Length: 640
Image (cartoon, rainbow, N blue to C red; front, side):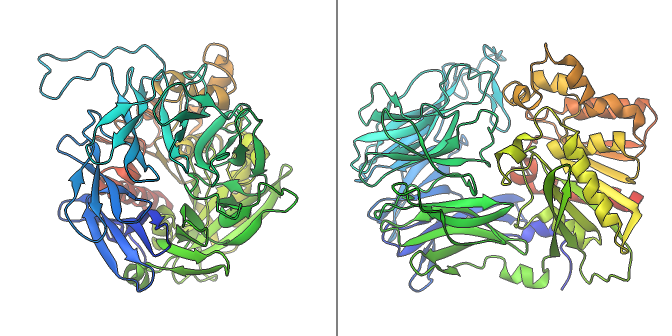
């Protein structure tokens, strides 16, 4: 057995997009691994029988599998030579794949009609689109609205995602929505006559985060809003009788992050009815068949970084949410069979990156049907995790502590404080590869969920609004103080790492606390004043988080910016940032680098080419490995 190292991420396999067949006989999912020869992430769609465990690779290089209601046909998305994804179909029992759609800007999402004759698909419509090869001169780009580009998606200009009705045989497509707003998350009514969807075509969409649930006839025409009273809606499913909808969202404009959501029942011309979410925050997206024939709604609920399979009866709210299973793990991608008797999902734990699990709802019996990383985990077991709970400033704060392999209390170890993004992210009972690698390199890892973290309730989450670097900073430092009281923690060898909002906080910490010997700061927010106008979410996110616009809030933005305290930094700083990051633009790291360098501080700046904000997850695998290698090298240089 040996610890995990950065290059081992090439050996880890991921499973996602799980769907259980309507009759509960099989599951379909995506299996993704890195090809070390091509250095590309390769995915394949697998159909696995639940009776005998036989697995068949259906399609290679494809994503988003969807089974037809009768289970005979598999639809999926496949990229063509232009990198645009289109809908393809193939028989489950074998045969050739056939392309269905040929939409100019490809397909982002899709849903089968109940009778299998059609799809409703999501595709971007760009009024300024130019066919490849038709450009005769460099093309200018004109911005007419604040939201003119997206991280990872890049330039969007005047383009919006619209819904199309597509014939499953001929591929003939008809656009059925229009207007200035993105339309998505489509769901067919059980009789196939109507389509529910989520749209952000709301007043002030450029300056705030808001979305609604709309319902329209299959043939198109004007849609009607069913979610008046909610500020955010993100995924939706029909009741079996087609009279009601269940939606995951929020009634509070200050709780914009999907990781803190409630469950509502919607009925036309009625106020939304909240049925769950106060105790267990609802995990998105909802399963299309989550509303079972017997009336219960199944959902994954998170609490304090753990996942639970829950059931609620919307017609008898005197009954508490029933917890069917979970805890000490994180579950995603819930799928429910037609009878509501079996569910499938992807489950991760602190010692397992993720496998497909199936549960029989009646007996609550659960079993893993894959073991995609069993061999790897036997050779490289996960680090031991301890949960730490402490009180500070009127709140109960939870943290997770990971220990090196062969940990010995009689020895002394360096400590690395890792800080999550968001600020509404959270560390959970899942496999965190960065934490595993740090522990594998001999560090004790401290992962605190300070106020602002999700899954601890809406008030805890909102406590960070207008207070970046305030109480959340003190929560983190209190966790460090507690660990440093332990005899095996070397308080003279402390390091800090954070990415995104974690990068902000790492930059803030080294400007206010000098005990850390090394700081690794990834894709940070450093100057809130300039980020307001350069980030793709600078306005919609920034005005909520920083409590005002750049014009009315100058003093506060400057006061809360790590750049303001660059002259106070004594810790050696390693900055790492993607050059095509539009979420936290690279100019943030550029400003910090120049300010620190001009002050004579120890600082290095690493720029990752062709990399968005999420490049560690979706970018070139070699760049992710380099990020981890450079992190370890910097920590070793100054914390050894």
